[in-house]
Image (cartoon, rainbow, N blue to C red; front, side, top):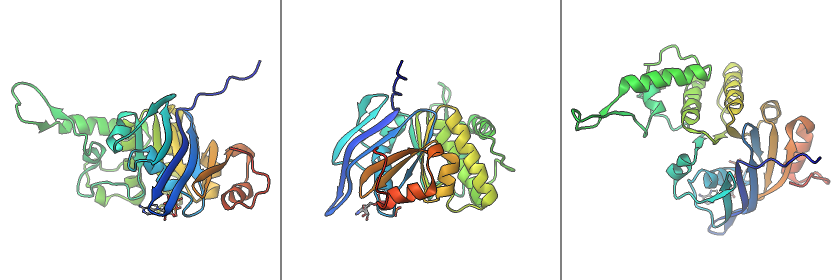
Length: 258
Ligand SMILES: Nc1ncnc2c1ncn2[C@@H]1O[C@H](COP(=O)(O)OP(=O)(O)OP(=O)(O)O)[C@@H](O)[C@H]1O
């Protein structure tokens, strides 16, 4: 009996995006499944960030289709994507350095105390702190001082807070743009462990990275963009750095079709 094909969690088909004369995406396809780490790789200017921006509602596409669980969706902004369980960890992390980890976790989505006796919105700091401590513990993230301003933490810890925030609200897909680019070896290992843990919860983690050894160590699948199109997809266990670089640069004669 043939193995039934998995239904993609997130699928992009024939996505087009132009910036003036530049056609950043020229009919790009992309697929992400539940419970996997899929790396999105490509040379500089291949269209990775543009595709992620389209799929996370930051940029409106000029054409193509996006589906979540097989249902076509259209995002009119990042919050629309978030409502569909899609979160993004940007390279700049988008954290508020003067606020503590809990406040950063709930930035823009603060919890308030309700009730008739409180006609004005009052932040529910104890509830946010409790949920934040639990969120970090679940991810295996150790913060020495959960009340310290984020700006006083190490780069790896700040990264972990940004990831924890995405994880706390994403139940479908997390895009991570170069999440380890600025980190040392130990911190890099911790962030990658977190990525695996999130994947094991059934979330689809999309990792944008130029670091090929890292891609092969953490990704289950790899999708390759070149000149605004998906040109190949690989199972990480069955490929090599040479093959990935060949697909990125176009020097592979026999690319597995996407
Ligand atoms: N806002 C913009 N305005 C004009 N051109 C843009 C804009 N954003 C991206 N581009 C162009 O679209 C193309 C794809 O860029 P994109 O940043 O998506 O590639 P990338 O694969 O993420 O590259 P890198 O690895 O260098 O970050 C490039 O030619 C880029 O110059």
